Image (cartoon, rainbow, N blue to C red; front, side, top):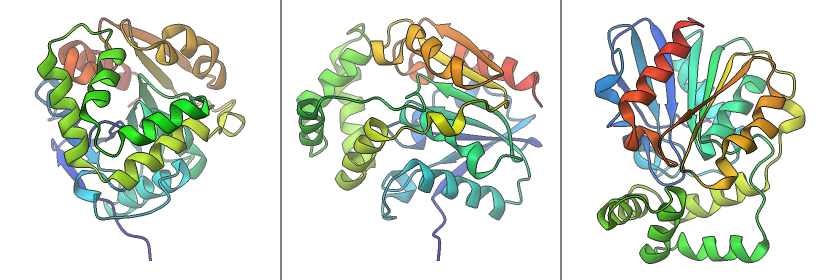
Length: 256
């Protein structure tokens, strides 16, 4: 029997938006964004993937197929017929795939600083190092956040994000999702999808999430795609929440 993921909601509008978190946090990554969202027009469903946050005790294989089914399961339980999708980083790959599971439910997709549908392949030694980091290496975790933001902030920002990552998720899930977004390629499945797609990238993000890479991948896969670059690193919901909220709502307004 399928378990229902943990989630929370924000707002009471009639347009539904699913917000899915990244590798380094649970649904609370969107807390800084919430005050700038139109909660009267939209209802936001903030989902915790297996092994994270409110779903920390729910186990699985942590694949994008499993995650997509889990999100559709929540929509069905809430009797939501259609919705907008937002995914950040590793969940950016999940939301690209989700129309394969529910082609008639998705009104639009926003992928923020995403892993493309083709994945982010890495050398074996890098994956082995990252597996070690998932076991609780705060120093190396801080270095990852520094790299993903071009070291533009103070030390507490990096330490807070690292400590939050380890406290909100299980080690098993952190390691499993690492292999998922490094080794999964569903680009052949999503190629040609005509659901409106907004790719959001940060000017100060890592090269694997750059505008150039989005042009080479997502912009080629989706027929109705557009690209917006924000003056942030990998975490615009924390770095530039006001401009991200305005960017999202402008896009949703065109596809409600």
